[in-house]
Image (cartoon, rainbow, N blue to C red; front, side, top):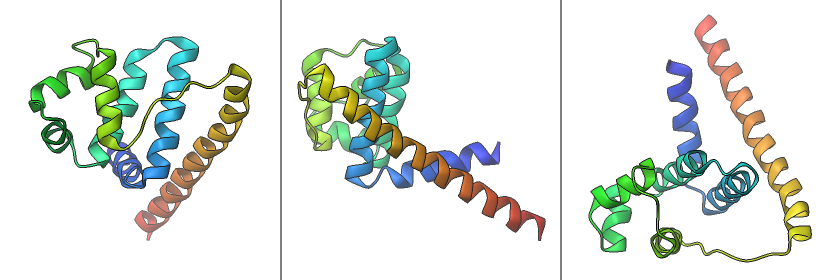
Length: 134
């Protein structure tokens, strides 16, 4: 179980970088567009919120109560479009509409970024295993 905690901590640390968080959200959104898996997308959004200060901090900046934001991020309540865009705006992002052909080339670039994150995770895990064996 420690590995999972380490991976989550590593991911959250990486997502404090706004560009990495943006790429991560783009991949999460594109996956949602492919398979309609809203819970998967909300996990991605929740991870970015956690990396950017957590639910209480973001809710305060949005002017809503933390419970309302938690319900949205947990999937208990379907997010309204205006609430979703408010979350993104508060995080410093916005939605854009792009032609599908452009999405395909963007998808390739984002896949490379995602692959790089997993490679870094594997390296970190190998160092952790090596340190434990000493």
